[in-house]
Image (cartoon, rainbow, N blue to C red):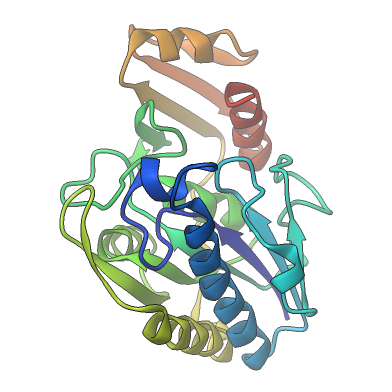
Length: 268
């Protein structure tokens, strides 16, 4: 089996603060990287134990430079620098059997969500073909266009609920229980490492139970921003239409190409 792991930061063990933990250069960033590596390597080890012969990790947090490459197990390869996830060697394609998400969080505006946001801090809501979703939903949808199922997620309790409501069955590694936007009851790495490893292994052991999450084409992505200036910035990108003062829209037949082309330009 080939496994693709999407790695984010806000849902990592022990992380509860944007400015003091997950932002590169902040006081707690290096400690966050250690926790991130613990979560990631546990997932890789569990995937290998579950039958994976190849693991590709995509570091999608901030600049994509969070992974300490010297600490990654030899069975895995890491995509760094956040190139568009459209095609190999960086992208997820039909050759993969499973998608795992490590360190994920709930979407923007989530009640009782821990560090809730959708890709950037200025996006208020994202809808794919009218379906409200965050990063979990959109990345699962993109994987679905390649017939790759989402099989396991690690993150906080709000992320688990969001994913369950949208995609249904998957193995859950809840590493912290959200108690508002900047607080959580956190399990220690000694527990979360074992939990993540066991859940990744369990997911691949029952790989045939999972189905890709699919949204039928053609695709329309609508984004609502918190402020007018962000909508104006987004509407300057080719293929993006301004709908009103705070909303933009884009359409296409290839979801991965549609989203990655937009996101890479918007965050450049």
